Length: 546
Image (tube, rainbow, N blue to C red):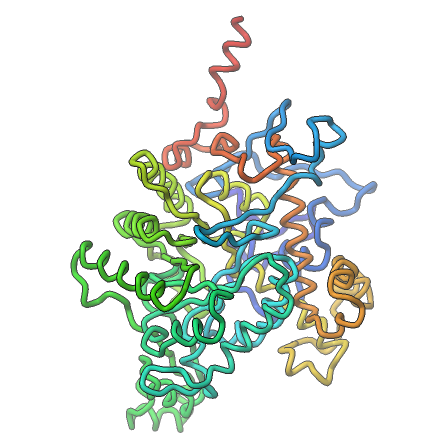
């Protein structure tokens, strides 16, 4: 497809091989020296909205229409007049209707509204070691930029230092570390969401959270994700750790207690073990039973004190999609995240990512349809977050407009993690004594970074903004990856403001599906959004014939 190009010479962005629809490389390596568009955005912020070599070059789009079904088959509608959603303190005067005045803040929730400065959230960052290693950058960056971050499943279960007894958590140092990094810089925007799967439920994660943190956290039930249709997994290389996880009740493959496997490990033929979570609801065989079980789970969480509850579901078929929407509505959940196939931040099986589940655009288009049906029947749909292959500001606009008015956020999985990788690599070159602790890979700054400067203040566009927010003395505690995260958020926010201003929408709540058109007939058929030459054609003919 024309959409998926390896190099973007206008921006100076480069991918290895053919990139995903998100624009990220298929394999995003934490040691990467650049430079995809997201990588560059972490350094340059909103400057990455514009082509490079200004005053020395001109640039033009390298495609017009796209082939096939996907978000690349949507285009953003622009208008030559009007302005909607202007802030109360402004007028429709051109001096006020500028893109920097577009309000991209959002909120979600029922009884308690969770406010966000930008309409994004992270994917679930759970028991994968990459999430643990770069967590300070992810959490501090999310708190400073003002968007929710999700602690994924199994964090307590894989923590060697956690202590469990009879289904109760006595100690959970890694989970506490995750929460504390975010709350230290939390200023009323964003949230920390803690996810639960089968093992987390057995381990008493919900009870531990409500007793220690109350409603400072949001708890999330998990049905699945877009990366795979089995439970979450990680890979471990130590036989001892594999046996520890087996003793904790996890599925470990191959069996680390099998004498044949142990011998293979000693011979270095077996070099790693995969730890898997269990499938949920295997003892439930009807939709009615699933509903009863789900409502009972939510009722229990409310009984022990949780006021904010969300649900994450994956790229299942239409029946499961309808169930997730209807149950979330009936249970008055605060948020439903719907993740299309097929990505993943961990070690999801490759061919499962390639061939399982419903891709994002068809799944999200059906979400809008089903939410509309609920509303027509007098049932308020849940607030929605769309996930699955998003990384750019045009993705944010398209996803929010496609699901409007139900979609409130866009969930970004792999993209914001790049900020943590890049920032940690840079920080490690300035503090080699801490490079290992930072999980930095570089011995010195590569040329791809040196072209932006030699010092952090030069390299990161958001350095001064973060320093102004936290204070000069506190800057020594801010991970460079968090500053990179703010650069990425700045680029997304500025780009979204520009798209919205062009659509004459100065508030997210004003966005509608009318702000989108389709670039090919396949995408038109799936989304029911008009083909580009047919949108507003009746109005055009009236003008010509009047």
